[in-house]
Image (cartoon, rainbow, N blue to C red):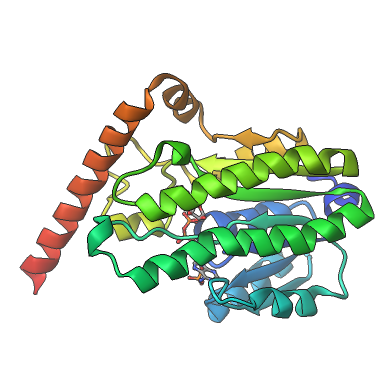
Length: 273
Ligand SMILES: NC(=O)c1ccc[n+]([C@@H]2O[C@H](COP(=O)([O-])OP(=O)(O)OC[C@H]3O[C@@H](n4cnc5c(N)ncnc54)[C@H](OP(=O)(O)O)[C@@H]3O)[C@@H](O)[C@H]2O)c1
């Protein structure tokens, strides 16, 4: 059984974006298990309400479900307004997605909306809530990125580039916020078993490298935050690969893997049509 998060430092409330599924949903559960109340943010209202009820029953915590689209400019005003009366000690800026495919074949409006979600939303959230955390002189901020983003990831070029921004922002804020008593950790995840894998056409059972469980990914992230580490790649194998595989080879491996999965996905869609 994991040690609970320190409520004095990271409570009484946390905020998790992208809480309706995958890594964000698991962050919500693990944070609530420490007795910290959670603000849940994502677009799918019904899933947020369902999760809120579940954590409230299981862990006796309060929740606030705030359905909103973080790719919309100006969302931060609504989020600030809906949380102005509570003391938030931990922010997990996790919401994000990928649009895999050949860059030139992807719709530019979709690329721009995803870029806003994967960069500007992190900027608004860290700026608004970072100021509040700094004022209380304790708390934590986790930014969810992606392993290898700095190398460039072919076939998710735009999304990989956005994650490189998240990594750089988080590492810089780790330094700036340390004297203010605020811990900042970048969680640079590798392939993890969530809904996003469907978009690539990956079958978690047959992937060349088994994707990590959300439970392990999130507990690695929270452990790193407790120690105020600037960045964590969850999973020992991921860390070894990241350290040993040269960027040019990593790009080729990812391009091949994503390319094959997308080809299989479109062949099966054609067969079903
Ligand atoms: N799984 C992996 O292999 C992997 C690898 C590297 C990085 N990551 C990163 O990990 C983070 C979590 O992803 P995941 O794997 O857990 O995928 P997921 O299960 O698809 O979760 C993504 C979450 O983001 C929310 N979201 C998406 N677009 C949104 C928008 N416009 N406004 C508000 N919320 C939005 C989704 O909720 P709604 O649809 O309800 O809005 C959902 O809760 C992302 O930043 C992703 O890039 C994942």
